[in-house]
Length: 511
Image: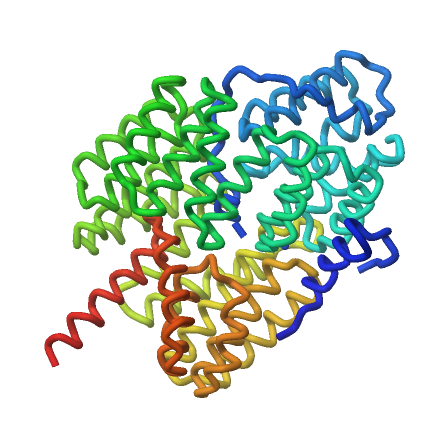
């Protein structure tokens, strides 16, 4: 396995608790790694320990500092739209504050992107105080094509502020989102050592334990999160999502309903109920919940995501033709809205749900052309991850068609992308693609090593299951099957895997 970026992250935690930065060289969204729909704003509770109690900032505006505190607190509570609003107000109060623009862009990335704010943060960074500049560099760097500056700045911040729960949380949460869950968890646990009831750390750790096949621990932490913030809908929303993942659909629906009782416009819980009903096979109820969500959507990005989830219901029902037509129309709508995040989500689903390999190849070729021709000054971490995902899927289909030379060429592109970006998520995609190649060549032992680099992809875990079956390793096979079980979400990839499994089982029965 290649571990260029992974070894960089390891240096963060060597040499005692945290190592001094002596070097220069990402699991899950907790929640999914891609940019997500914003969670609606609710009342913000400023933390007892303010982040600027330890990190000095250059701004002389008291109002700007207050808005920045509220922005970061909103971000920690997954209130991304609110975080953006507070950061925008901070920028209005102090137009020279790089941190205001950095927080603005960092929170906005969870919904779509804010390139102008990102550029302003970069341009104004030199005017920041020393530790403030590190925070700006981290937030800006985490969004760029080369994540090295973010890694360096994060390491420096943690080293300088090893007992600041906010710094520990920001670093731990980001590492977790970069699929470096073990090191992310260490930092999140350090955050809880400073404040045992720190809500954002409880939330992130809850997801982390579910992802590491310890659902009881994860659910326990999320229940504590809900007890700490009894009138925060996000705590109920997190429980609703995790209970669905672990198979408790009725519990999931109840928690989503509790979130909506607290805030009737908490949109992720509203369409979350649609997602749960979809997996329950109650399709008319799923559509009704999605329709309610569409009525409270306040932006085009949310609308596109909900319409996408609603279109997937046709596939679950077995109406593949209508589903494909709906997705094609949605792709055009996303392109017209210039929502590249939504367009990638929709087009990737179209690939996985295409009627045949030829249609999938044509869609992938169009996606690769679009993603490979992004100007250098427009490259972002998210683009790199999307491009890597497309290359891996092209390689998987090439191997299925016995086109090993094509697969090798695609692996080379992935290798180069991983080396240039130094992004752990891209590295993980590259390694799992190598795992596909090794499995195709019958090298199942080494394939397992590579495939385990990306355990958030149902398709990769499905291949891991096949490899463990070939190795006749019952314990490892059971672990891989459990991993697939806890990826239960109504996505196109989950549908493709479960549909394949059903067809395989039926085929075996009929033989």
